[in-house]
Image (cartoon, rainbow, N blue to C red; front, side):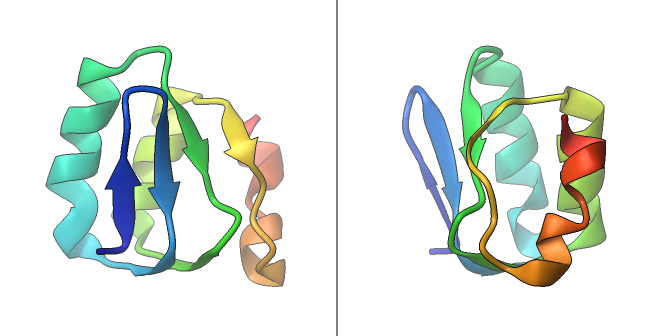
Length: 76
């Protein structure tokens, strides 16, 4: 499973596709103080990027992936 959820953190790993969008959106709504861990994420579908940008969530771990590192200014 590309996204593991807990009360405090959503951990995105591997390739996160459009199929994860609905569950991720629901988690964001239910956990307004939750943070996102992108450390081991290799790919984010644009719908997930849009949710991250709109939610202005803190990152518990920044991505190691160089391409995703370019998104950091939009996620802060």
